[in-house]
Image 1 (cartoon, one colour):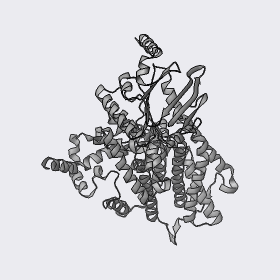
Image 2: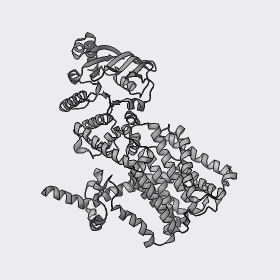
Image 3: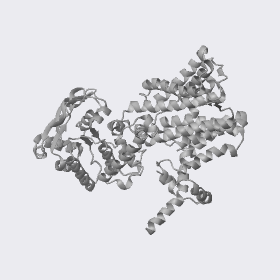
Image 4: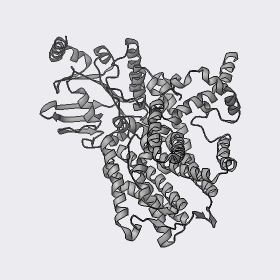
Length: 256
Length: 359
């Protein structure tokens, strides 16, 4: 069953074509990797899916609904969670509050009922706290649940951001370079956790530079190059694709 | 959570040890107290506020505390907007003015009871805040500051230029004392209890607000609107809502101010007051609730004390503010609070540590 489908997405910034006629399908319950050299348009694609930017042309469908022109919060409330490439930890809160912030739309209560601390608010806050602690335990951050988020290390903040996205109970999780800046051991643990999420039925769409990790955990891989989708398929077929090899080798030579 | 700076024990803290040891017997342990429900020991705080004016029975002090309390309500409302949601408003005095004028007009022209006018003031301020907030809260930073500044000035012009309703620059006189159920708050002492009662009510409301999902939404909006939107927070609505709540607080304060002073005059609600409220929040400390209250009382007291020095008062005032901002950049309330929390919780923490060692 197709969960997310992109139909000929094009995004232009003042004449620069960041994405060119990209069409993609995500099957429910799978992990899809998105790779490509720097500047290929991977993060732009994520911004378009999560509604932070609007495509110049093309349509995005989530569970058959057209979400192309929806606001970000509407898209999130449909069940699309995301993390950011440049981490957006909520530095002025504690670790557990960061996760609780992710539960915002699942918790009931408006301004007055929160301000008066009515009985059901008390109950939902208590339940939410327990759920947040479960998520922190899953991510290995339970020992620091009362720390200020600003005192966590970079890799812990990355985990915390994943936790905030998980707190939404998303059906589709967009991870923008979750392993960037992590040590090999931490990357391995992250891969295990993403595997756990897959078993729980979460669909994961992953942008990553670490080819090893993507090849290992992704069921399918799509390759972007200069805004165009140049290959799509199983990790094995992508690895052998001559266009991909060319794009990556060229990219590496240019980088060096 | 206490910042690292507050955790080191300094030699000079030895001076405080004896009073702190005495205090920790009656005051709650702040570390375990944090975010918890109302406890029996909170009654001590309440008791202190109740007894203070009786011990210090000087009408001038009572009046000062009344004005300080009104300013504290204003600062509390603004601190939700400025300290939590991270937005700036230089037009907060306008909502204070709207509250005061609503009460003034309703009580003098239509002889509506002050208790009803009190609620009507908050509602009027909120409605105005909603109407103004919808267009201008799309702005950020300096632009928002300028837009709110402009709103404050427009409010003053409207008040001055509609004498049929507001009596123009002369203002409205003869507003009755606040009364409720036949009981009239006609002395400074009674007003003190009235205003501090309202302040405590609003403080509890704010405290509940900031520890619930709404408080987390404010803080999230302040740090990263992208992150807030990505977890399904409706950022524009949250900003408007917190603006409206701040304005409602200002409306309450304005109504009480009109009843206490028994006049409403446009000069009282100008830019000076708006900036003063912002100063209270910044000096007191942003991102906590008792910081602005500390700041409000401190500034009210400071301005009253400096009043003695006539023409030198403003320069002295300026110098004190600059010094405070240099030495207490995170706010008096926050800094003192950090040490206070550290020192008060010293004995309980020691006890816990020892229990941990043996157990």
